[in-house]
Image (tube, rainbow, N blue to C red):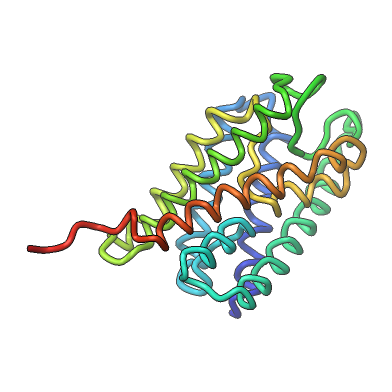
Amino acid sequence: MSKQVAEFLGTFTLVLFGCGSAVIAGADIGLTGISFAFGLALIGMAYGIGPVSGCHINPAVSLGMVAAGRMTLPEAIKYIIAQVAGAIVAALVLLLIATGKADYSVATNGLGQNGWGAGYLGEYTMVAAFVFEVVATFLFMVVILGATGAGAPAAMAGLSIGLALVVIHLVGINVTGVSVNPARSIGPALFVGGTAITQLWLFIVAPIIGAVLAGALFKSGMLDGPTES
């Protein structure tokens, strides 16, 4: 399996089961269940495709790796193309499944798209949404870089990263639906349209800012591990 195929499949899985948990099972499992669906999907893929591509499945993570000096920009671009493609195909598959229910309407029920403001979940402001996405992605990237760094127990990386995504969702679903991943936001927005498209910029810009800041922090050496005496 190539790295790009792995990233496509990983992002496809995250979006299909993460967003799918909200669209298809949200009424039954609630916000906690949706949070775990995203985290468990990531954990599964971390161990499934991690040895192939590192399981970024997130353009912000790939760019954060570039900022940290762990990846070249040309390679990151290839990853990002595969990730966005995987998210778009997953959103299409989810739409095809959801429309199999007689009372489903993409305009009413959506596809687990991100958003903010009047009529969206907790109706938080744009500023609140932007701050949450930057800070949450920054902390998520810190976990990723730390868990995959030299000296970290490799067997625990997928679990720690997936659980970090769970807690981010537990806190943030009512704020933005939680993106921290531009691909995850792009896929559903393309099929929902309207406000989801006009607000999409935030879920591209804010996660990238947060991830790149975290990568730069690691690159600077400020989060280096302790040295032996």
